[in-house]
Structure formats: structure tokens, C-alpha cells
Picture 1 (cartoon, chains in turn yellow, brown):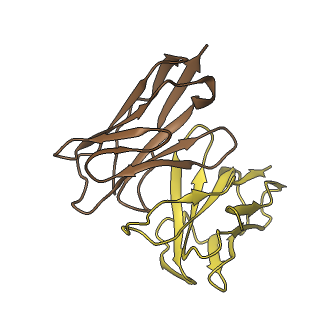
Picture 2 (tube, chains in turn blue, brown):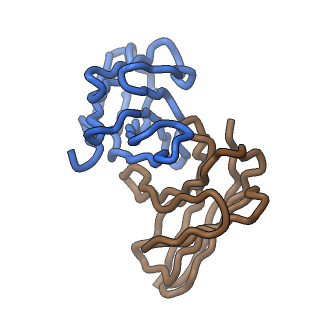
Length: 117
Length: 107
């Protein structure tokens, strides 16, 4: 596609429910990243994929968070038993190369605004 | 983790040149320095990237001194639409974005 696409753009859920957030990266980009941004704050790294593999899951805040990527393309971030502190904008980015490569330019989607009531 | 320090906010007027400096004392030898721009309700957008000396593209210039412990983003003749948050990064995907610099351009 022309850019990174995320869906839904907004998600309101009740505390304790599970949510799935989707990311469609730019076609041909091998690396995919998930970040979280709380209101007025910078971005917090969550997880990174190179192809379908996630070599680094250290940023996931708890075991309620998981992510997968299939076919080297679409990725889904799942949050189980959501809590109010999970409310934030979840941003996905993709890059042609990977970390520390010359092509290390991240292209971001517009994010999913998650609100946990 | 890679850490940067930038001013929290800056004000400017339309038509002025704006320089935003970022310090990155623990940058590694092979790290590139990258700047992003973020508007409300959007993801960050790549502006410019460099390794040393000076890089210029159609929207900005990036100045990096020889020791590479800092960098300066230069926005020539800003307009109201340049009001945004600007982040400098190095160190790859795990870099802490930080709060960035909030630039407010006034008429």
C-alpha cells in the first residue's frame, strides 16, 4: 500500500475485555515496529518484527500484551484483560531495512486510539 | 538505551529560521541521527537523517559536529503548518523518543 495502515482508528472497550489492533505495513518493508504513546508523551517501544520473527519483545509491558506477524506483512497486537492504564495511542511503523541499517527510516501509521473504560 | 536531550518547547514567528538542537552524548560509532515531525492525531513523519557534517533536503537541514554528540535541525522560513513536535533519535528501533520539542509558530 501507499502507507502504513492501522485499524481501527479508535477503539473503546471495557476494562477486562480483550482487544486486537491491526497494522498493514508498506509493501516490501521487512521490519515492523509497535509503539505506544500516552497523552502528551513520547513514544514507548513495545516490540519489533524482522519478517515474521520477533527478536526483541522486551518492550511489552506485561504478559497481557502479545503480537504476531504473518506472511511477513500484517501484524496484530493483542491486549488481554485490558486495564485503564492501557489507554493510549498504539502506533505501528515499518522500515525497508532494519535496526542500524542504512535504510533505517521508520514510516508510521496514524495509530489506534485505545480507550479503556 | 539511547537517550537524547532536547528543549521541551520553542516559539517562533512565520518566516523565521528555527534551529532545534539535540544532544546525544552516548551515540555509537555506527548510529545515524534521525529527526521526525509529529502533528496531533498522526504518527511521526521522517524529516531528515544524517551521519556527520551537513545534510540538506527540501524541507530541512541537519548539522552534525565532528564529535557527533549533538545535532541541530534547521527549518528555514517556518510557516504556521510547521507547528508540531520534533523528535531526534539515534540507536535504532529501541531508542527512547522522549517528549520531543514542541514548536509553536505564530503569525
